[in-house]
Length: 506
Ligand SMILES: NC(=O)C1=CN([C@@H]2O[C@H](COP(=O)(O)OP(=O)(O)OC[C@H]3O[C@@H](n4cnc5c(N)ncnc54)[C@H](O)[C@@H]3O)[C@@H](O)[C@H]2O)[C@@H](O)CC1
Ligand SMILES: Nc1ncnc2c1ncn2[C@@H]1O[C@H](COP(=O)(O)OP(=O)(O)O)[C@@H](O)[C@H]1O
Ligand SMILES: [K+]
Image 1 (tube, protein in one colour):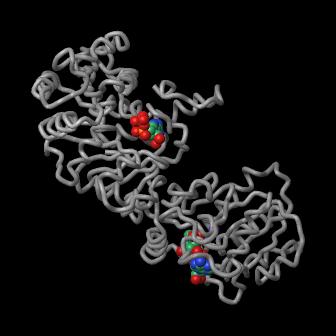
Image 2: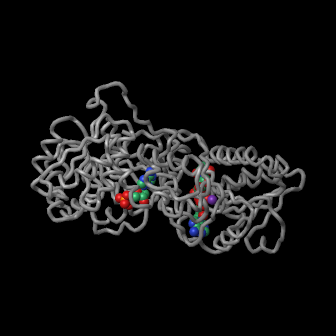
Image 3: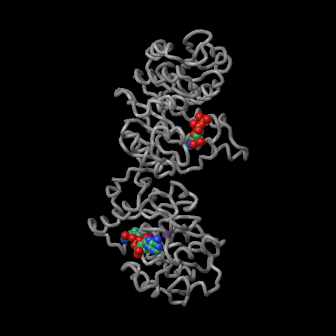
């Protein structure tokens, strides 16, 4: 099972607030202290990372809540380093949260050089005309409860038009912490300082474009207060890599059976097989309709081929079932089924009967997903196997009548579907979402548009299947396959600006 570290737990707005409240109530660290830690850690990172930027004057946009309070702490630290501050209070100063009020009084005491100005409304500010080195967005944090109101809308629009860098405190104002949707308007930040946890909405919908780079700032929150989080950020810093045990007999170092390919679609089978082979498996056994054998004999020298049926067969049918089950019964191994199978009636029947009788761990991709979805809800995974489904959004949609149009709905559906069916689901797209049978979901944080070319799904399925065959758990196999693609992409882009092809990810 994947075990994300607390820094990679994704928080919703309500969980963020719950963690704040419990820390204040149960461990007796007061809100003022939390605010000091949040604001000072953002300020220290700013002072360190931009010390050569020649900053002289910052603009701080503050709401009346604790997000505004964090921002006043930043202003105080930067003022100590001779960076003048203009504070705009969008909701005035009469109604500040108690800790923000305390910080406002404190900030004024630190202004011994007359470097602090403030405005009690957005309208009062727009009458001035100064140049700023940067803008800090402290208007709204996790307390956002509706579409932006009043002057918040104008301030966000204005800030987004400025050429200076915009830094968001905790979350860009107007971005929904749970869904990644824009609530009327949203700050487009260059960088976001996430206090006490990344928010789930950073990685859904337009979240990545609004947050810019995300910097995690640790707060003194007990880890166990975050333990109800069920969504995690996937990255290479913590996912364990698969281990190979070289020197063993070929059948003891991972065996993968691939059931794939049909007339006109042999390329999918080849890509999946090559992709899996590159991960160092002991043996790959490609089961194919006999009529296609001669193609694979030429293109896949390292792969063992087991043809079924007669020389005229160019797709799988029920008649091949007994033979296929016999082949995979011989040696322990995992099964990848789907790439390029085709959608003939006979193939659909073959696939569904195979899946109901197979007892090996199975990775179900492409046309095998099509076949499964033809049964509507009438299928169950056999109890003694593990299944991984790898649907793209179109394939995922065939398993439900509900709308999965936006990422938040997709996440919710993947979570329920995985646990209802007791399977692992890798929902392809941006973000990639891994849903697990026990509930946790994992999100990717990298740009997946480079993978949107035919064949990349086959490569991905081959990698997942290879890792399962090497003995990794389903969730780890999916995570490693996604991260392996990212690694290949990063190194490819270092040398080339062309669009990568599936072979570049093998
Ligand atoms: N003690 C704490 O609870 C801590 C809070 N922290 C900070 O505090 C933030 C949360 O603070 P709050 O709960 O005070 O919430 P916010 O600072 O996000 O603001 C809530 C206020 O904004 C108003 N508001 C909500 N939606 C609006 C809209 N659409 N248009 C205009 N006004 C709107 C609300 O009526 C409320 O008065 C976090 O994001 C984080 O920055 C952190 O510093 C850690 C400690
Ligand atoms: N390493 C990767 N990281 C993230 N997503 C990936 C990766 N490799 C493939 N994908 C996803 O797989 C999709 C391609 O799969 P799919 O649409 O099934 O194509 P095909 O079956 O034609 O190869 C991509 O759009 C992308 O969402
Ligand atoms: K903010």
